[in-house]
Length: 437
Ligand code: NDP
Image (tube, rainbow, N blue to C red):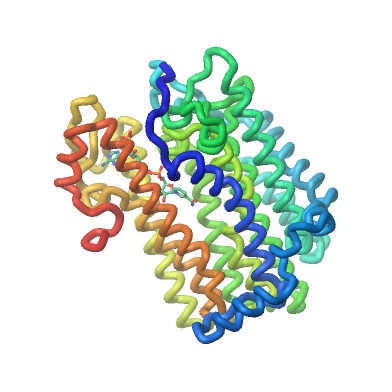
């Protein structure tokens, strides 16, 4: 039931170790290199690059302060940690007490299925109601603490991710656990990172799906709201908040709300069906998503940008197009995998018994959903215009992430479907963007 993992991803244990260190480090670096405290963000100018390098090498920058205990202590903020903990506990209590339908996940290799409680969307509504009520009563000043205590909140989320990853790694050695096919290499560094147990749970509480949708994703929206509040305080009220800031908030709020509203759709994604829960998903869900995806909003809080009607309309259209492709393609696959085919999509039945769609969005490329996601990512960076390349970090990173993910998924499908996957690749030759890649 739990075969040894014989091939590595992420270039094996050294790669896993490097990503384990780099993920929190990059989250901090994005703040230390691009924030009001850092004196702004690096400009877009090739001629300025040598100057920046010389300045970085000669000035006592944050990465040169590593030897000092004070610097490490400055990352810690007890109040932020307690607030973060309260937020996490709120999400757990909301999961436990808010009623929700019980749905079954895709079949496991044990032959059974896992059951999930669907109440992420009401959790969001409850939390959003409390936040908006608070801002309505006490003004935008009451919700700028996420901007002010940024580093403290990042550290709190990193601590939470490390603790959870250690716990699930240790618990995965208890008898009777179903391990992820890719997480049982026997190398502790690698297995800790990639995730050893497929679905670590405490009773009916599924740790992986909970983290995937609630504490990090909802927090991302609240971070954005906090950035809007920060700008409102500086510019004398919500009426003076810039169009660029509203666009970023609207796009990302829509993405988060949509993800939570369509909660059952995550049960057919690779994270849930294939990956174990380890440090990679823990830090991704809890730190990376809320604190790096909100970079554009954080930038706009201290560097307001006015777009005007033409820019606003163009970026809006790009986002709508991306969202349409993302939602339609994910919807088609989700319906199909749940045994329905309302659009009468063409498909072929593989030797494994599983069917692959060959028309509609899934006939255009093997990952049309990634294409939609990438268009949206670009639309989320464009509102910051072009004063710094740092606000394009999200879309650049996302290109790398999704290409890597597509390669991983292709390998997974190759193993699962064998010759049939080659047949499918001939029918649908493009990987993400038709006629391009
Ligand atoms: P997909 O939703 O593309 O799922 C891939 C799986 O779908 C395959 O392993 C295969 O599983 C099945 N599949 C592939 N081709 C077909 C087909 N033709 N017909 C039917 N089933 C098929 O991948 P992800 O889980 O990576 O992504 C889900 C969404 O999440 C995407 O929109 C992605 O952009 C988004 N995402 C967002 C991230 C973020 O940070 N914002 C990070 C990662 C993903 P099987 O056949 O075994 O069922």
